[in-house]
Amino acid sequence: MQTGSRARRVTSAPPKFVIGSILRHILVMTGTGAAGLMAIFLGDLANILFLSWVGDDVVIAAVGYASSILFLTISMGIGLSIAATSLVSPALGAGRRMRARRLSLNAHVLTFVAASLLSLVIWLLIPQFLELLGATGRAYELATVYLLILVPALPPLAVAMTSASVLRSAGDARRAMNVTLIGAPVNTLLDAILILGLGLGIQGAAIASALARLVMMTIGLYGVVWVHDLWGRLRVRTVLADAPAHIAVAVPAVLTNIATPVANAYVTRAMAPFGDTAVAGWAIVGRVIPVAFGAIFALSATVGPIIGQNYGAGAFDRVRAALTQSLLVTAAFTGIAWAILAVLAWPIAGAFDATGETADLIVFFCRALPPSFVFLGALFVANAAFNTLGRPHYSTALNWGRATLGTVPLVQAGAVLAGAVGVLAGSVLGGVIFGILAVWLAYRWIDQLANKSHRADATRVAGKVRSGAAG
Image: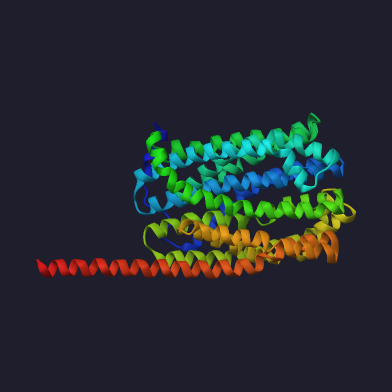
């Protein structure tokens, strides 16, 4: 009974982001989002940390190959969840709660169906994907085992992400954070038991992550259904009716998000000729990046609901302010992360027992490459704006531009000029150009929407004046 009264109090609350300090909303949502997101990545980091203590570079290389494919599945889940934010947050901002409940339910259903189909296709193509990445021998065999267990866990992960997006759209940053914040220690605890305690190695790491995703899904659905009551009655007719609007955002959002893992897969393939030590170094860097820059990745996810609610309310000055202040916060977070990584570069390498080329790659990344994440973060923030403001295909074009024109030639040149270190440098430098372009386009589109809204308001006012004069 108490839960029901709590749900009624929450559901009667006005849209949260249309009033108050934009910067405060950004910092609160990003802080909680970063805690939750970094918790996921700390769980992944624990996977590879525990495995690194086995003292076998081939195991770490196998995780590196598998991670490129898992990153693809996670990005698909994120893309599907973005559709929920783009549909639910404007509905809440406009005060259309019943529509928001319906859209929330249907977004979860469509996400689960799409994620199930995608995971099946990827699961069947695991051998072909690993061959494309250049995996061979024992690394290929271990990566296959890891993926066969973990790829089928995409549907519960995608549903958990969708629940977190709906909770953020409702302004409940704490519960959105809890979706991942609670799942991470579960993952780490199971890692310790299965990898270190039972000696299951890479199989134990995969089982731990799969079980943690089920926990995340349960927590997310509890917040959406029982706390916020953002869950209507399931009707096939309404699911089919809402599917086109969901697909219109989800398809370009998925395409946008898979551009980054495709680029990372290309980098993995470019690292492969330099041996398992280079791939192991890249695998560790790939785990360090989301932990160090989790706040930036969280910002790109949390700014969407803030923009969406204000867009639904017609407050374009606040939409523009949300974009501007998100970019400033991105720069601040990047500076902090760079300082910490530069100081801890060698201790980070030592924690993974990294030596030789593996250690050199880790240290080079920590000290030389973090500033590029200002522009990468700007690209992600602009993508969130495009997805929420009806231009998701802009995000798709920009991300694929970075993943192809901004990655392939630079990685190739880096490999020739500086080997594995050059590959690593080339993988991030292309984000500078596309980050700047994305920000310019985002401001331009917001101005166009504002002008269109003002013209529509003027037309309505003129119509009312004419009607009054005629009366």
